[in-house]
Image (tube, rainbow, N blue to C red; front, side, top):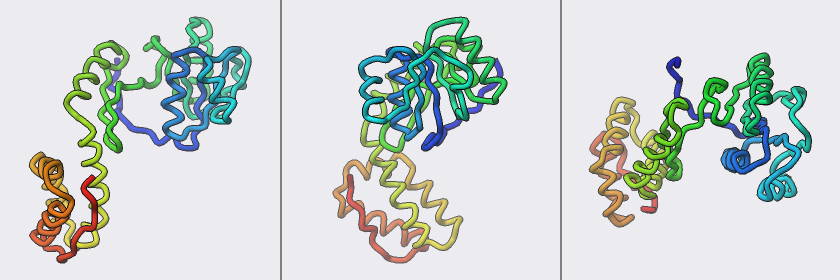
Length: 223
């Protein structure tokens, strides 16, 4: 197996095709919907969840067996039909069109793999075994879920809100970077968890001054 390049894709407005209408396809569609993708599902039959999503206009449903022209200008394809001949055919069609493809449970036909993901707001922690053992990736994800609770997502969101304010307050890019690094360390996360919003605001203002910034209080709530 070649080394894989880890990446997080922005799928908003991208056309993603899912071949298959069962439970696995339904799970793929759920994740794609959360990313704002334009979804086309190709299958004679759909789960009730997919039928409901189609009725709400959340996806396009092509009620037919797979045909190559249904790919159109797809950005990405997921195959969850469980038929070996169809898998091979779609993989060949995607290769000819330079379309990224993931064939469920057939790693040798995949151009990319979907990692097991821990999601905490803007924080995502992904685990991949390159298709070698999805079960072990899921086990590791469950371990990470127990280690990283919802506070981590709130903390990352808080840091994201601070960045433009710090960029405005501190002109020196070297000093800004040093402050970003200090804010990202564990001891500041512990302060984020323990301090009141007012005390946290004072602490951040003090740090900005210490790094050469202006004495402006950060009007942010501790969430």
